[in-house]
Length: 222
Image (cartoon, rainbow, N blue to C red):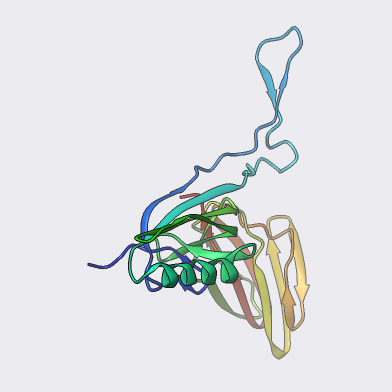
């Protein structure tokens, strides 16, 4: 039977002999800012006043308990020390059980629970970003022509993203129109804050010459 695992960076807990006995990733919680209305009903909800209506989220906590009873006490102590020295205090991409196509990002702490003559256990905790990121980038390539073309860029996640734009071609020149904003690009790599991909489909218009590559990584809360 295949062991359930957590993968922290390149450290696969199952391959290293650990049994995942319990784990929890705390629920996403948006940052709330409520101001009481003196003498009035209810409150003013200022949670997204400074973020153009986009909710922002608090850090989330991963907690996992790993156990083992193989080998002897010395070998188990060795594995505990190896894990602490390899992982503790660093920020890692972390793959959760049953979710191999996504990852979370967090700073990890390892604590020894016990190490007796028969068993050993550690607790892994991580303070994490709120997002579950797709394992792979979404990439859209557009062969730009002189006549203006309309394309749609789709963000299937929940996180708002500013994509990376790459323009290729020895004499490439691309005019990109997005909403009320427009910008011309020569060959190179760019990120333009005006091109913010909130969840859903976004219409862009391009004209000129060359290849335009749009790259971004989608992320959700669950």
